Length: 293
Ligand SMILES: [Zn+2]
Image (tube, rainbow, N blue to C red; front, side):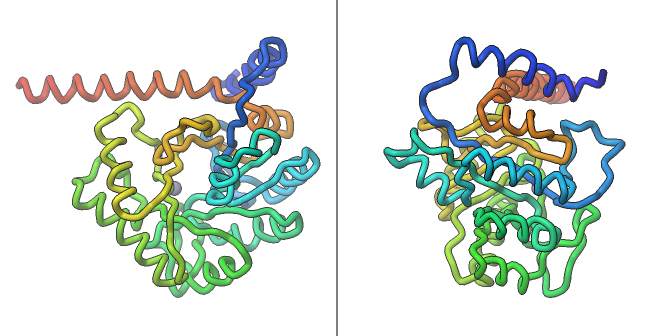
């Protein structure tokens, strides 16, 4: 058995039944689903855990499940506002996010969202959003005209930097530029304030100095929140500038998606955090060895 499907096995056969016995947290936690491409792109050579495409048929099934289970499906801004309200404990609210600004959001995902009246937030890497479609990661991205049209139809847009770099490897002046210029450009095109940011690639959670500096920078630039690739659901004390999400892709069957929404996938944040800490520790040791030589 491949390791990645171990997440599904442990979630469905261990953590979900365990939660039923010991009971989950009473406080409502906000699931923020993270999708990328909604297309029939084949990812046969990628392990299911790392896949980023969702076949339109599977996406339709996911949305039908949310509808059938009575979830209120909203944009990030609305979700965070509702989550902060007193009545949120009695509601099933879920946020839908789409990273990378792919054009298939408009052609494949949006028609399904519209059928259900669901909200969503799309994060744009602005260097790939043009007058004509620009390709990014083998997909065409939305054009500004399409972004405007979707915004008028109720879709929310956030920043996913300008060039989609690994920010942690850049100098701070460059990080500032990525964060500020992308926000300005979306605001100029859409005429509304951009308040949400999605961190590209794995969020360097174990690098505390970087994470807190980035949070400060985002706040000073006028952002109100930042979503990451950290696994989990948001709770009352979650740092608004390091919001965890639940990755979703075409390999998620109904049982796994349901388990993710209900919190039975949150356990994965512990090995994920441990892995990041070990990785950080290893890279710091390498740097020390280099500077000693
Ligand atoms: Zn991305």
